[in-house]
Amino acid sequence: MARSLLLSMTLTVLFIGVVSARDWNILNQLKGTTTTTKTSETAVVSLKGPNLNGYCESWRVNVELNNIRNFLVVPQECVWFVQKYMTSSQYEEDVERAIDEAVLYLGKTCCEKKTCDGMDAWIFDIDDTLLSTIPYHKSNGCFGGEQLNQTKFEEWQKMGKAPALPNMVKLFHEIRERGFKIFLVSSRKEYLRSATVENLIEAGYHGWSNLLLRGEADEKKSVTQYKADLRSWLTSLGYRVWGVMGAQWNSFAGCPVPKRTFKLPNSIYYVA
Ligand SMILES: *[C@@H]1O[C@H](CO)[C@@H](O)[C@H](O)[C@H]1NC(C)=O
Image (cartoon, rainbow, N blue to C red; front, top):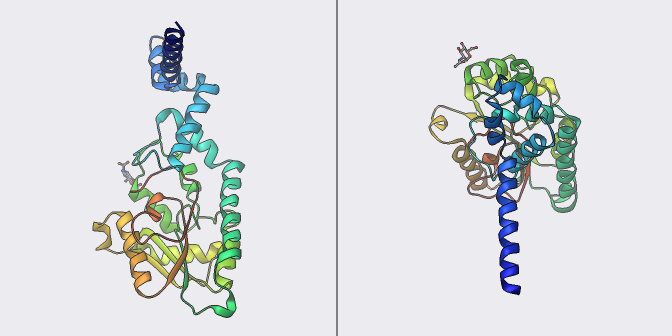
């Protein structure tokens, strides 16, 4: 008797689980609305209730956790959400927490001026780490809803008008003044070098040791491989890479594994 009660309770829980997972799937909800004359876009707007909010926040968090990988575009029903987050004060708060942790880590662990031999290194990504691409997405109005038009994006990068991320200039100089060599590792192409340098200086960055961009040979590799190869190269020169800060998981993947990684939020695009 007790066993069958337990069994039926288990089944009930399972059943509720199935039902709520269904409810939660926004695509099913959208199917339900196709019988009306609404376009799917207005249907999405009318569904911006707690369910869609919850679904999109969960999608975003799972991108940050690296559970969701290789997405080509942000799910259509969540583009508004990603836009809202990436332009919110919450995004800025989240970046600031990452910066705080990096400062804390530097204070505790890393080289002190008196013991520095010039071989302590730090790696920064550029896009959505030192420089923000948000203005590009704002002016194109799609925030990941369409695949990035590489030509158009590079035209924008070439204008050199990207602003710094909040508080990042301060972190950059703090790391530099502690005696670290700063290496900028970016998947930007080599031909964008002078635009990139001008943009970085304009935004307040200076004094890096090397700016590493993707040459033609590197374009044949995945970005992940390219970045890992550069870390190998730095290590082979004797550098100790204390930390890597970036907005893509590809900045940390592969060997050698950095001592610490600082992932900044970015749910607009995924580069493998
Ligand atoms: C990408 O942008 C370029 C330059 O703005 C434009 O000429 C081209 O048509 C765009 N490509 C697509 C697929 O939208």
